[in-house]
Image (cartoon, rainbow, N blue to C red; front, top):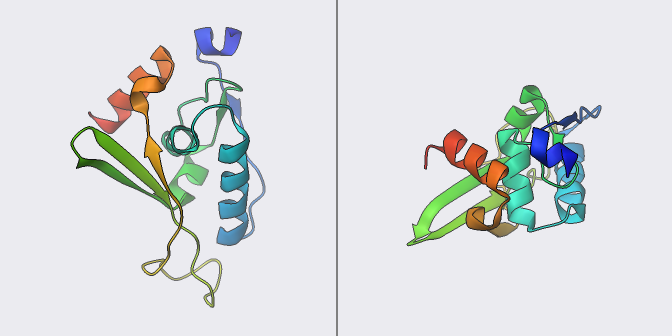
Length: 125
């Protein structure tokens, strides 16, 4: 609760060697955090500390995250896709145009107040 009140962050800076490693780390991390997976992915991507553990990624790692936002795909619905690295390409080069991955619904309204405010501010909603 103290982390939530003070918006303190635990800066998580793992040594990532490839896009596949980054994808796997983020998937496991988002699935293991309390709350909704889509919300956790969004917070990690925006650099907003997660409510439970105050985890945040450094900017360089945030930029490497391969997620795609679908804001207002339908009225009142927001989604996020965590794109898998495409297979058969070098891990550190190339684009991921053909990449696919799970799509999660975002429930920004269900975030704790401080995370919700920071998310709305950073997304300009």
